[in-house]
Structure formats: structure tokens, C-alpha cells
Image 1 (tube, one colour):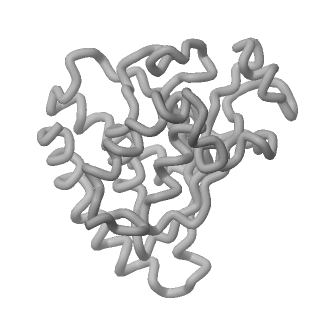
Image 2 (cartoon, one colour):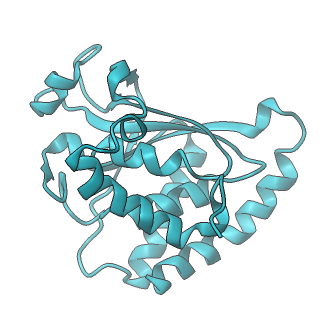
Length: 209
């Protein structure tokens, strides 16, 4: 894990400084969105909600062919969509490199179409980029991880252009916060949050002592 974190620190330090200098001109230019798929969106949403600089996290679907898919349709795996979160963040406080740092730390990018017991193409690891800058930043991170041989197995995270994002049903939003007592939240989501809070304790919105 130390090796993994070191890769991201080295990869992000210079870019973060450059973006801080260039993006402080206007408030509008400092806001960016990125769409990520890292297994069940309940898990990913709950983690990014706590990262300093993140303005909002919306659970939804991307990468498929069905228009306005429902949760039930996506769960069949037949629509081609992945469960995703669309993250809106302030580049004056965080940046793409840190977003990707968290992403590759809190999910397994080497398991094809699954995260733990969640199996299916809807649970694939993917980065949906909206422009060339996001694509290049994602590819740079993946290349660095491969070069450093951080994982024993090949990285299967796909880079896919974001063609359409569909917001998930209202009851899917803020799922962990609203259902903390449920077994899935306790057994699957909570351990991931604890791992995130331990590794990124200085980057939490509400820093823990």
C-alpha cells in the first residue's frame, strides 16, 4: 500500500501545483466533473462524499445503450451500463490526480466485471472521460501503476468516453447515509470508508483526530 500511495504522490505533485496556479482565475473555471465506475455506486459515493474539495456526488449509469435505464434493467447486465458516480469537485481544493488516487486505492482494478461478491458488467472498473485532458490523466495514472508493478494481476480498468450519464433513482442517492444499519452497508461499505479515512485522514472534509 505504501508503494501505491507513493506512485500517486509523485504523479500528482507537479500537476496539482500547475492547476492551482491556472484555475484560480474564476470560480466557474475551478469546477470540474468526472464520472467513475468502481463497483457498487453506494460504496464509491459514500467515500467521495467525504473528500475535501468534492462539491457533490451523484449515483447513476453510464456506458450502455438503453435510454433512461432503471436500476432493475442495469442489474440484468443487458443494458451495457456500469454503476457510476459523477463527482463534481473544486480544483482549487483537490484535483484529478487525487480523485484517481482515491479511486485506485478503495477498489480493486484487477478484477474483471466484479468487486467482491458484486458480479456483472455493471460492476466493471471504468473511467468515463469527458475530454482529452481527463483521458490522458487517467492513462498516465494507469501507466504509472503498471510500471511500478503495484498489482500482482493486470489492471482491467477501461477508459470510455462519457456519452451519456443517467442519474439513478432518488432512493439510490446517499444510500449509505440513509441506510447505515443495513447488512450490506455494515459489512461492505463501512470497511471501505474506514480504509479511506485512514489513508486520507488529512484530506477529509471533517478531519478526524
